[in-house]
Image 1: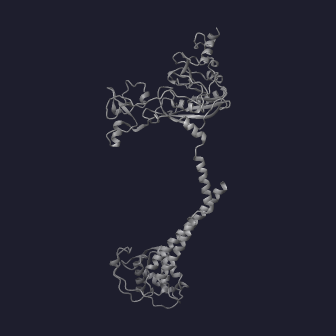
Image 2 (image 1 turned 180 degrees about the vertical axis):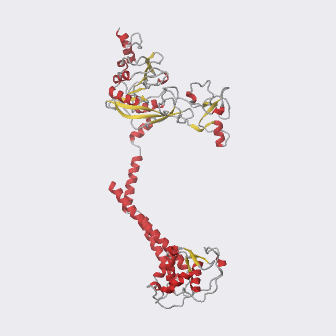
Image 3 (image 1 turned 90 degrees about the vertical axis):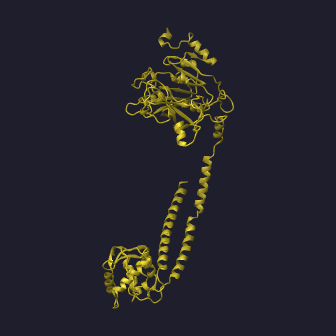
Length: 554
C-alpha cells in the first residue's frame, strides 16, 4: 500500500510541474498575442499618431506628452528590434533618448544618418502601445517599461527574419497580426488538449481511488456487534436529556434571539438576595460556595419555569418509564437488586461476605496534605486493604488526585491489577464553564481529576464486557466535596451490563441500583441479596461492622 501511495505522490508531483510549465506558456502566449495585435501591420511605415491627450487614460507616463506631430521618418526594422532588446534590460533604466540614439549609431554597421527625432518618435509610439512610460519635462526620458510585453514583442521579432543577426536585413516580410493570432490560437488549442489530458485521472490513480473508497466504506460501516450494542442501549421513547443554552438566562436568550420566547434548552435564573451586590458579578464557586447564604456575589439556579409564565415554578415534564433491565444478549445473566449499602469501617470489613463483583470503583480518602472535611487514610493503610478479595476477574476504577497518582498505581500493583487505561473528569461549574478557581492543587488550580483503570484476570471469561463504547474524558459539573459525576455510573454500566458492582468509600448520594456501596458515612446497613444477607449475619450477628479487628477477635 505504501508503494502505491508513493507512486501516486510522484505522479502528482510530475503533473503539478507540467501544469506549472503549461501555465507559464499560456501567460507568454497571451502576452505575445496582445503585443502582436497592437503592432501596426507595416512596422516600417508608422502612421500619423493621434494627440496624446486623446489616449491619456491608456498611457502610463510620469508627465503628459505633448501632441505628436506626423513622423518624418521611422527606424529601420533592425534598428527598432535592437532598441526593443535594449529596453528589455531593466538595469538600463532610466535612459535618455539621446543615449539610445548614440548606441544605435555605434551598433549600426552602415553609416546611417539617424536623427534624434526618429528615436523620440519611436519611443512615443511604444508609449502609446503601453510598452513603456516617458518623461518629457526637459528631454525625452524612458522611466519605466512593461517588461512582459516588451519581451514578448522581442521574442516575436526574433522569430522573424528581422532578427536573424545583428544588423542583417530581412529577406522576407514579418508575420502580420492575423498570422500571429492564428499561430497562437493553434498553440492555445494544443495547450488545452494537453491540460485536459493531464487533469484526467490515470488508470493507476483511478484504481487507487477505487480501493481507497472501498476501504473507507468498509471502515465507516458498522459491524453487527456495534449495531447490536446500539440497539441494546438505545433510549426507548426518545432522549430525555436537555442541553444548556449558551446564553445562560432566559432573559439573555430572548434578547440575543430577538424573539418573544426563549429556546427549548435549559436556562439558569439569577438568585438575587437582600445582601447580593450585583456589581461584584458571579461567584467563582457558584452552587459549591460554602457561604451561599451570606455571599455577596451572584448565584444561579436552574430555571424550570415555562417561558411566558413568570414564576410559575413548574418543572419540565421528565418521565421515567420504570425500572431498567440490564441484560447481556437476550438473557439476564445476573439477578439485579435495588440499591444496597453497608455502613462500615472498610479497613476491617470482611470482604468475603460480599461475594465477587465485575467492577469495583473506589474514591479513597487519600492523605494529600490538605485540610479536608473528612478523615483520611495513610499510605500504608491503603496498601494493606484486601481489595483483591472482591474480584477474580474484572475492572477497577480508582480515583486519584495530586500526589496520590503514583500511590494509586502502587496500590493497583499491590492489589493484583494491571493498569490499562485512565479516565479524566474535566470539571465545570454550574454555568457549564471550565472551573478556574478550584480548591485543590498546591501550585496550579486543578480543573480536572484522574481515575486509573486496571484489570484483573481475563476480563470477558465470566462477564460480558463491552469495549470501545465510551471515550476517556468526562465533562461534568462539580457538586459537593468528593462528589464524583453521575455519568461514570452510566459509563461503567455500558462497560459491564447486568453484573454486580461494588463502590468503596461511598456516601449516601452514591448508592445505585445493582451496586453495593461501602463506607462510613452511610445510613446503617441495607442488604437485599439473600445469599449476601446470610453471609453477613454469620460474620456480624449483631449487625455492627464498625468494630476494629481487635474488638472483633474479642
